[in-house]
Image (cartoon, rainbow, N blue to C red; front, side, top):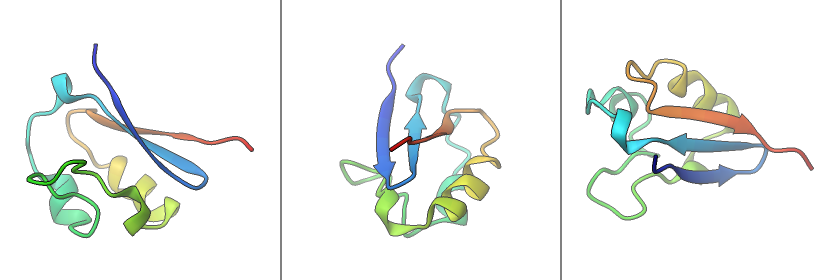
Length: 71
């Protein structure tokens, strides 16, 4: 299955489009990060790792997840 990764320092946002139900929770919570009409549509650098983690934990479909980057 297709996945897309968007790094931001210590965290990487992972999007799995096939799981996305387009509930727009991500856009409502972090409009400075998620821009559905743009490519790439996720601009992870526009939020802190903590903000991203908190928002991703609210994704109802599980289409968004994250991993911590090791140095």
